[in-house]
Image (cartoon, rainbow, N blue to C red; front, side):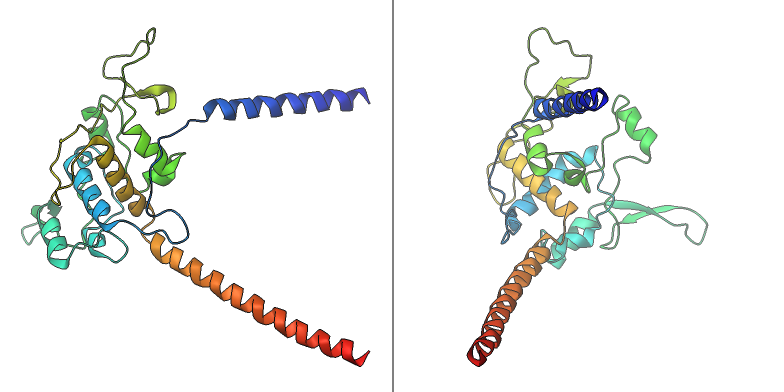
Length: 259
C-alpha cells in the first residue's frame, strides 16, 4: 500500500512539472486574419505574389526553398502568376548545368522545371557566411516550427532591445518570440525596404503577413483542394445521414404497423 501511495506521488509530481513546463513555454503570438484558415479558407493571390517578392528580395539571400520549382508559381492554388510571368521569373535566375559536349559545366537561364536557385553551394558555405549558423530551408518551415504561421509572423516583428541585465554575444539579437529570445539573424524587414509592384504599402507588418502566407502555401500547396474535398465530404455525409434516417424510419414504421 505504501509503495502504491509513493508511486502515486511520483506520478503526480511529474505530471504537475510537465504541465508547469508547458504553461511556462506558452507564448501569446501576434494574431492576424489569415484568409486560408477555416473550412472555406483560400489563399489571397495578391498576398502570395507579394510574399514571393519579399522572399526573393529579402529572404532568398540566405534561405533556400529547395522543394519548390519555378513552375509551381503558376500552378492553380498558388500565386498563379501567368505563364509569361512565370517564365520571366525563372529566366531571371541562372543555374549551373552540364557537362556540355566539351565536358565542361556551364550556366544558363533557369527553366520552369528547375528548382529554386540555392543561395549557397553547400551547408558549410552557408555556415561560414552566417557566423556558424545555418539558415534553415524555408520550404516547409511553417510546419517545422511550433506555432506555425503565427510563430513566423510574430518572429519577423519581434525584434526589440534586450531587457536590462541581459547580455548578448556579438552578432546575436534579442527577439521576444524566438525560443530563448536569442537569434543570430538580424531584423530582415524594415518599412519600405522593398517596393511592391501592386502599390501596397510595404510596412513590416504587411511584409510579415505576405511572406508568411507564401511560406504557408509552400508547405501546403494543395490546401485549397483539400478544403474543397473536405467540404464535399461533409455534404455527402449529411445527405447520406438524411437518407439513412428516412430509410430506417420507413422500415421501422412497417414493423410497428404489423404489431
